[in-house]
Image (tube, rainbow, N blue to C red; front, side, top):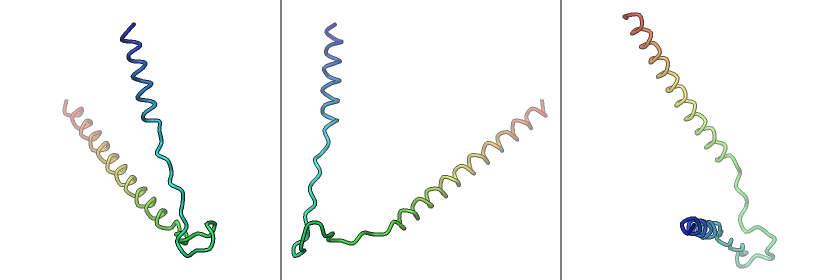
Length: 85
C-alpha cells in the first residue's frame, strides 16, 4: 500500500512539474512607432515553408522507393532459393 501511494504521489508531482508551461513574453513595440497595434516587422511569405515541405516529401518518397526495391530483391532471392531446393 505504501509503494502504491508513493508511486501515485510521485506521478502527480512529475505531472505537475512538466505541465507548467513557460509564460509567453508580451510583444513590445519597436521604439519610435506610433501604437502597439502597428506591426514593427512586415510578415514574411510562406513560400520557404512550402519549399521545405516539398523537400521533405521528396526525401520520404526516395526512402520509400529504396525500401520497396530492397523488398523486391529480397523476394527474388527467396524465390531463387526455393527453386534451388
